[in-house]
Image 1 (cartoon, rainbow, N blue to C red):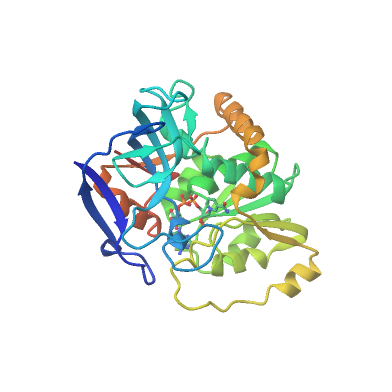
Image 2 (tube, rainbow, N blue to C red):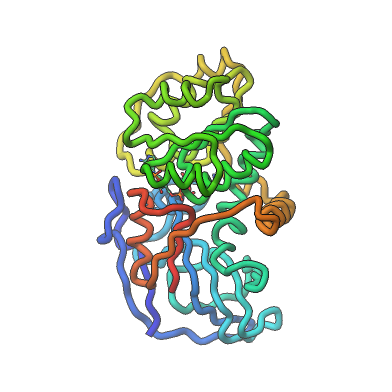
Length: 331
Ligand SMILES: NC(=O)c1ccc[n+]([C@@H]2O[C@H](COP(=O)([O-])OP(=O)(O)OC[C@H]3O[C@@H](n4cnc5c(N)ncnc54)[C@H](OP(=O)(O)O)[C@@H]3O)[C@@H](O)[C@H]2O)c1
């Protein structure tokens, strides 16, 4: 039998396991022009939370009682499509199913000899592209500038900080545990890191670690952490808004400091982005990330959870900060 995970209910506030349902069905058969895929790795990502709401966004919402979709790595196990051969590995946005049928549209073949398969969901996939393109296209880092990254020990943040170091920036990370702070400094070579859960005055801590002010703030989390960083920005600062995980589960709009006067007097640029805005630059970005990876200038962490049934749990754990680097479920 084939296991499938559906969205059972739209979460209210923080998602819970009861918002998901595991069902079984027959393993499907590939028809004319189709391939049968076996899921190997599943990416769980904070943005999936937005798709669980019934609201208009840059991607349509998930439907109730329909399978959830995310980035997957799968193996072709049967093929009636001349472009795919059994034994090929592919990545694509696919359904939370152990086995599924595809016509091959939107799938990219990945090479297990060039990198571990799971890396195509992280540093050589969507989150690596987000880090590289958000930082270089909007952050425009220059040698000697100060870069602050929130969500710094996560999939995107840990790569942003390392790219900032490669490009000559002083890099300060903000993360949610002492272990993550230690990893940021020792493994990812950040200059300083702050545990936002134990630091009572983040604005003051940023001031201390950024004596020349903040030139780039790569924002993964939003709300109070971001308010504290924005209070320290320099003239002509650039602020790529990548994510706002601290707000995704709020049911009421939050109030915060009025940002317009700060941006105005600092002549600062704040710009939201979705990684697909830069899809024309994906090949160049993958080339850069692969080269840095091969040269040992970039490294990455993964938190691997095992078992298809644990996909929802792994997704919920993102909101508890249980991952370091990319959260991935191995089937
Ligand atoms: N714009 C785009 O195209 C794009 C693409 C990919 C991702 N994103 C966004 O980028 C951000 C990071 O994504 P990711 O895939 O790299 O996830 P991630 O950082 O690997 O995982 C989420 C992390 O967020 C932190 N977190 C959870 N709740 C928080 C809260 N209330 N306040 C502060 N931090 C909190 C946790 O770390 P701590 O232990 O540090 O709290 C957790 O480990 C997300 O906001 C995501 O939506 C945007």
